[in-house]
Length: 385
Image 1 (cartoon, helix red, strand yellow):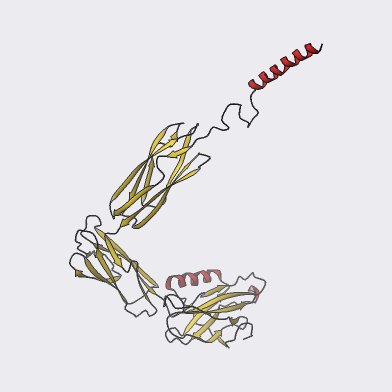
Image 2 (tube, one colour; image 1 turned 180 degrees about the horizontal axis):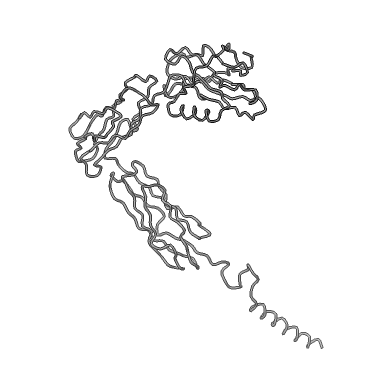
């Protein structure tokens, strides 16, 4: 009996082992003897492209071999160059297991100068590397150097000031340069070219034209060089008129539906080297209060563009129902004879608010109408006027 049971038990163990060997695995589990998961795997023939040193205008191209080292189909979804100076094209976007294709990369040295650090990104269905980065490095030498480098900025706080800036243009290439101004319609700047060293060094003088009617005037000034690699040279020129005193908010909108009092912060910004002060504040409505906050002093490292000091003010407003029907005018009187008064409008008219806002953005200052105003003694913060 015992011997028969042992024999039957032996047959049962062999039977169960055989069944386990032929039964399929459960969903999500690998069958015995097979890889855990079949995947695509992208591989490039090289890890990076070092351009070395190029001259401006030198052509540069590279072909990189892309291979699917995985077990299933590899799909390239997109190729993303890091800047407009790089063009990349894939021969095929779908690769079977073990298949390869060419990735052609072209670098345009006319669109980027100096040190080059650009990446080409390759997106695919490789779960281990859903996107791969192929770096491009190198250095592009300039044919022409400009001192100071562009853009040319002519800054002034006086609209009647005539400003000039000289840019030295040097040819560092082996062939001589012949720099000449390319005339354009509606010239916005006076430009003169002076040869310092024949065929190699030129001084170009830029000067703004009067009268100054806009906050910012800009133009692209072009020159011919006589060089095959860089036949034209274009320089961006800007004239910026910055008043000596400005108000950050020329208009404040108070909705008629607002049910509670509110407050707004504005800034008076002082530019240049003068010692500017607010001498008086006037308001056409007693329902609005104006309070000074502590002034913010700043170093005039870029005067007159960066403010030398900033005076914050708090505008305390009533509810919309308590606002007057007519616009309220707030006047800030300064000790600057050129800009003696800056005006702020407080209105419940949304269309008028937008109109004044657009006007101030185009001209740099708002021009609200004259209104009878009352004087407000200048008080520090938290003290009643």
